[in-house]
Image (cartoon, rainbow, N blue to C red; front, side, top):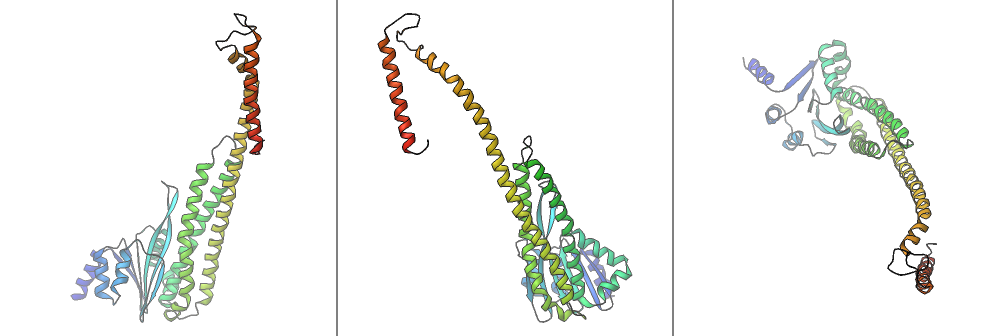
Length: 318
């Protein structure tokens, strides 16, 4: 009777579990204080670790205890509205006979893998038969592999941005800024995970029946490839940004060249109209006057021009 009540209480919480042999995977989506209190009553987890499961300001990390490991990972979730990825936290408790995952439900690869293990006996046998350490590897492998479609999308956008950079009719600055922001966000999410996963191999071996070095070696290869690709994307975007700036400056210079030519052509008309627009009687005007005012005006203008040319020459502007 007590077991039945406990089962009903677990079902009322946002908790799902899969058991195969003596290993149980407990999956908690959108955890609240109620789910955390359930874990506190049924497992001997440190209270600070349980509090970290609800915190959204944690960095990827690994805490090692005598009978379990506590891990935090961050994985990217793409926002179609802002076109920039944000991080989603995955908290994991790994023990001898259990694996507990807590997340917001936005990690599609993890959600799909859990459902696959629920309905597919072969998937359960393959993932659960080598204890909790191997099951965690399977989860991380799915999550890391889910990054590659994101990288393909980024590379595809970069090809489109490259075309806009060299297209004078399109303003590529905004597209470059959005893409650059997304790559920076991806780097901020992925790079700390690589450090945590690199440290995990030796600590996780006690929860696996097989040698995990080969599997984590393959996992780290994938992580390194992702990080290297993001580094390349960052460098290429910087090149695109500099190219867009140079091309934009060249377009402005060409426009200024045309405007300078037009100004030079119009300048004689401005000089003549300015001279004859003064309230001074000069030869050639409506009221004919002496040449003296005209000569004096031209001498003053020439003197000012000479002083300006000398000043520009001293400043090495010309």
